[in-house]
Length: 169
Image (cartoon, rainbow, N blue to C red):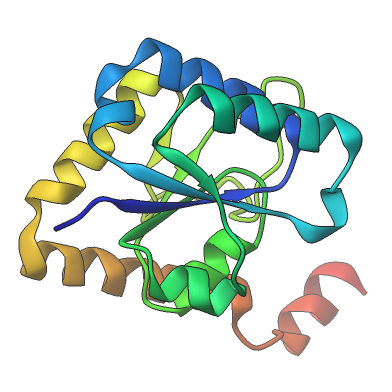
């Protein structure tokens, strides 16, 4: 069944906010297991300290130890805030949900274009989104992935030389 969520962490504050979401929304703790994949360049004391606290507090969390491809292969869905690894997950065929865990910096790799990627601004919204995704079934999930893959092509697609010349030169 659907239960393994890969959380693509790009900033220590994302862990703090996600921890508060887990505390307030019981279904997020009880229905899913989260593999926390840390942005490798971010292994700061603050991040490692927050990670340690969360791992002790929540049995539904574990730190990822594999490569991105290995982590994606073992996941049913990925959540992300400010990392392009969320778009890479789509390219790997994994459905994604954007989580707004950025209370002080507003940045995302989708250029604020969320037509095909659901974005959740609260624990309640994430619980509802994950719950709906679980209920989709194979056809619904395939359609979701297909829509997201088309979107990802606009981010990772070929460079538009003529458009760049026209707009910026």
